[in-house]
Length: 339
Image 1 (cartoon, rainbow, N blue to C red):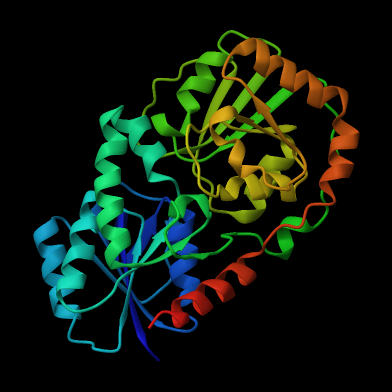
Image 2: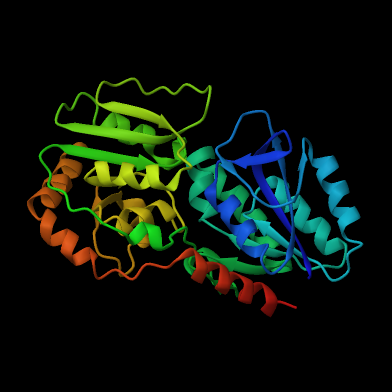
């Protein structure tokens, strides 16, 4: 079985030799690839407890870039191994250069539009920094992306990430809207737009919002009577119940590549509201509505959904959503096609 080294900038928590991350994709993708490769996952060490346990045997964590780079050099002794880098960051940028210097061609998996993310985090300087890293990395790597536009006209393979299995499609529940019960599932970060959404519905008594994604022992500057904040949920049945207990899902991100929570909401037939910056995620999917980032437009969108809720849910039956099994199969095929 060939080795594959998965290189990530994500923070991973180690407790009694069990490893945890917050990004579900960092759990499911290595576990899926582990069926066909001997997966070695490299990541950054975290002092905070994370949510999802990564169930593969070989995981190494590093607390600085020097120990990370040293481990990459030692791993290069495996001549037939492959290197899969997840996303472009300053860490993975340096590592991709080192891998190329060692005579290998890294495979870089782009999960989102880094231009948008860096702009949301760093302002106008962000896209310039990302452009420099992307231009160099894309010239020395094989690329896999979850969206064609993320490749920016570079050659690469496109896959459709998904966490969905048969459980997500069982006993989908119809629901009427009496009051707006909104749900957001994801990281509580500025670029995810969740603070913007909180301000948008501040003091609105007929709109409630549940946020699922808080880290343990972390406080957030969101203190509103109509907003509840819950910790990350890694139990699939409980997560499905959260979708079913709410009537509209909101994805307020300023930038997204291929949001898997959107697929989860559609699988449970919950209409989704997004904002103009990420209208590209719609594709041919039914049940996604675009609002401007102001309360008048947002409320108008909610009322439109409320008025046509039954019809919208019926239309959502037509969606053909990818499954995790299909994603992993295509991902493995894409990796094997690179020499």
